[in-house]
Length: 384
Image (cartoon, rainbow, N blue to C red; front, side, top):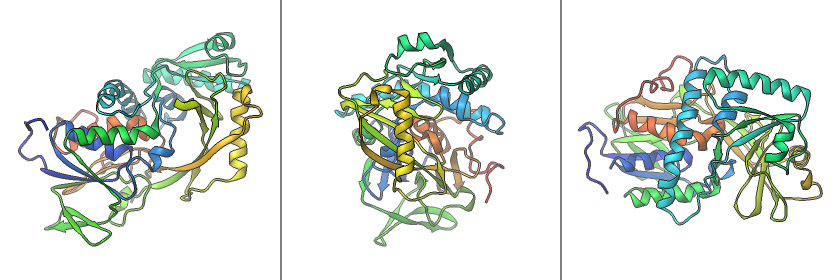
């Protein structure tokens, strides 16, 4: 582990609760600073919402199509998405160097096709937002799209996001775990945290399911959509369920870029996997799938890629997106000794580096950025 050259008030022993994208990314960022970090995960690291996600690094699409442009935090959030995408360009090769597991980082971009006149109107709106938020977005014709992605159905046009990317989300947990351990961090799987230890009004550790207490100078909660008994009331997270499907596309021509359609997204992964998703079901905490939703996803995927007609879905699953009361991340100190890294919602994989940097700043391991307070637990937009 590298020699420490950090502020004297930096916590010596940091426990991170949660081994998903946010917990593991925060742990690695802190380990890179020379901090002693232990990650506690109730199951297996990287096997929760991270495993169930699509691995999208689609900052351009998310900013122009999914972000509420009237939200008070719209501009800071667009900045967080952009910064996180840039960080991945640095993180991906450094993480890959620490692991034999292929991360599958692919920066070829994303494309949003328009298959109807209504879709074209949404592309018009997205172009305007791209200019407002400084996103690189290229409008191309249907003929140009066919030249770029011949596997796609004929479209009226498309919006190309050349800076967007993707990675193999099912590999990311293993890659981050390898990188954390290589830097001296510890990951304890099968250790469920049920509460917080308090000493003189300060969080001083965690209580495990077996009753064991683990002392810490600071605790970071990165628990995703999972309920946590001692969570501050303003930081309660609502689950938003998403169902997804996978095709075996080993014998098919598939799009080279991520396809962020207006009714479906598609991404080709290693081993001939073609994933498609996803539904959005607020308040649903179960992980079951239902035939109607899977059929809708299947038909939308087959409409976008005609060669999928006749191909059966070989896997289906669901995950839970963690959404805060104002649908924005919550990062920073919530009470003495307790820090939060929550509410990544639709973009946990994408924002993992950016939110991890905010965790590092909140803990005093690096200088605070100008935007650090926008996503603070103390902001006015969070409702108890």
